[in-house]
View (spheres, rainbow, N blue to C red):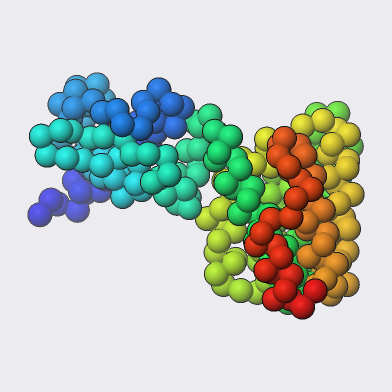
Length: 259
């Protein structure tokens, strides 16, 4: 067994190796089905031990990004096998990735199907602190739109937009939904960043968010459900996706809510 300090050093260096490899993997320089450089080459390139390289590669294996085969090497897995719910993976997507249309669509479809129900639950369960968090995030969005550089107090419209939706997740008072908001934050950031473009679009989005916030504040679950669909339709329009067709799961959720 390695001494504690040495083990910690190997893990830290392994994390750095994983970070270095994430750039070519997520930017598409190394694509699914291709091999990563051999361990010895990575040792020489990054001037680290073989144990550190293996630690970094294992980090990628654990997240479904690569698989290791004796006699073949380390092979990049198909994008569909990558664990995009892992916070580190979604952070790499935001920092290094060139998101494919399929990935953007997948994240949007998740939000389109889930967030109307989440908003309805928040309308029923949100506490005073949750409502305050939504209001503060909305104020940040409003101030950012009114700024010539689309920021307020050092944060962008997109930053506040994400915080607004995270506050709704937390407002359900459900531990699973609240935790999912943290896991999904980078992926949601990516989609919102892609959809938030011009000032006119942001002002339209702002109005839709305000209506959603008011529905939650008034404990109007049906209104919050519909208002969220209205927000999602704006996002779909900005992403170039069909925003007028109802997602199949939305009909199921409406039935569950008795709408």
